[in-house]
Image (cartoon, rainbow, N blue to C red; front, side, top):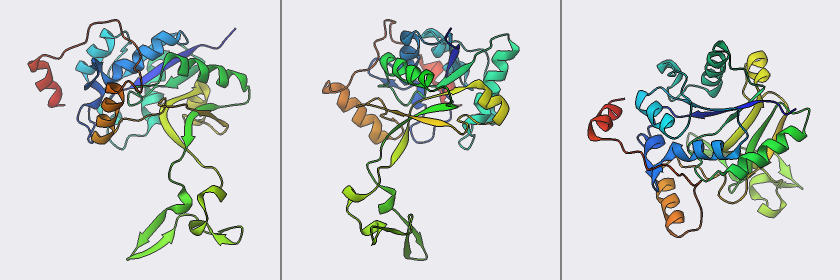
Length: 260
């Protein structure tokens, strides 16, 4: 029997780089609708839960099929709020309502090109490793940390000290450097015991999930949004298909949302 798993979709209302990005329309629908769609279409999850501090966001989430068991407290929805705080709060709220899950997955709205197939592939890989605490999406980094620097008082110091075959890391050819992977926002999966026992969303034994193509594309800046729109227009990428008619905020609702 497979363990039970809940999808957690974080959608706070206070985004600074792109205002209200989680409900801004990409293509025909609000950004967060695509994460809800890929979660539901995967057939993996016992529940798909939206974690938000906004009543309006909650209504939009419910329209697209997510459950909204309650609003996230404002102190857990700030720019500096670590993920463990809202994940711990949400799981405990669900448990208090009698909804117990063996595992959870974080599906961030900023990865709209994550598909149901992506979710299924990650879930199967997670289940295959019995010793793993968690799985996290990664991709090969385009800018190697060996080529990165600190700047202090107008002097540069390499992030990575030491040498690579007798040559300083920062002077080495890229092809000779150890492969380094960066996490992306596509997805994370973990056992709920990791949160409850270790107060962590990842634990110690973390396995990589190598995203393919646009699965890990992250929309966090206006440039990202413009590029995502371009990729869609050129039919280079696809969004999860949504059968519902687009949700539209009326002017009054948008004004309330703009005020937080």
